[in-house]
Amino acid sequence: MRITREWVESCRTEKGGFTNAQIHILQNCGLIETQELKRGWIRHLVGKEISEENARMFLFYREMKAEKSRDMKEKCFIPQEATLF
Image 1 (spheres, rainbow, N blue to C red):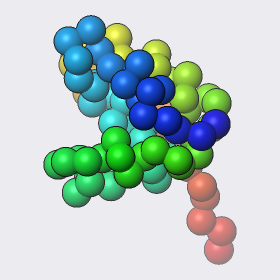
Image 2: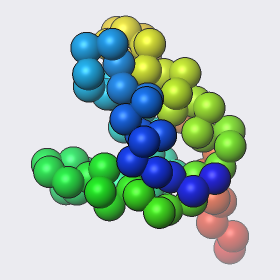
Image 3: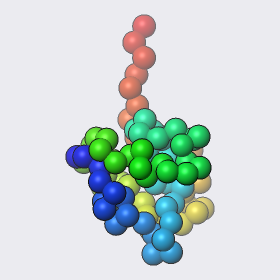
């Protein structure tokens, strides 16, 4: 699916931010880099493609508490491309 500003805004937590788990999903997908998180990172996302599965996880993890988010980071639940030798 193509990312829109409206979609990203609808995925905010009830306090108006984003969880570490959500950011981790975007980083694992290669959609954002750590240095892009300072300012304007949503603008950089708009127009990019995200899989339906990762979009569902991004929305789902807006409810994740901080301690669960840290645990989740240790488990790489998003498949990454394997390097072939």
